[in-house]
Amino acid sequence: RIDRSLDTLKPVIADDDVARLLDIDPGSPSIYIQTVSYLQDNTPIEYSESIFRTNVSHFIIERRYDQM
Figure 1: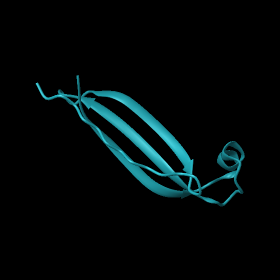
Figure 2 (figure 1 turned 90 degrees about the vertical axis):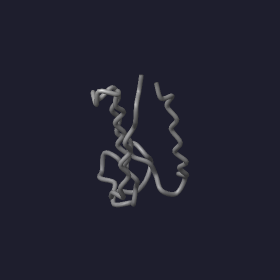
Figure 3 (figure 1 turned 60 degrees about the vertical axis):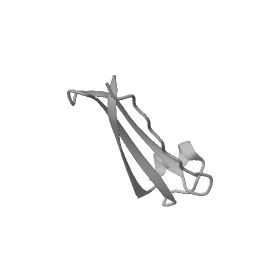
Figure 4 (figure 1 turned 45 degrees about the horizontal axis):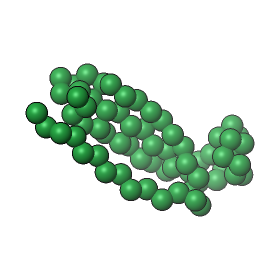
């Protein structure tokens, strides 16, 4: 069972590749999110990285994990 998740959010500037993929101008502000989820023994079970446009993003993060 997943025990916990750690999200890291930080502002970044879109480089040429990210700008092309997000359909924004290079140098535009963006939000980088890294998520790592862990099992109870601290083993990482999930890892993801995402970059979002700031002009259309809205974040609500809620995680609930049953405790055994």
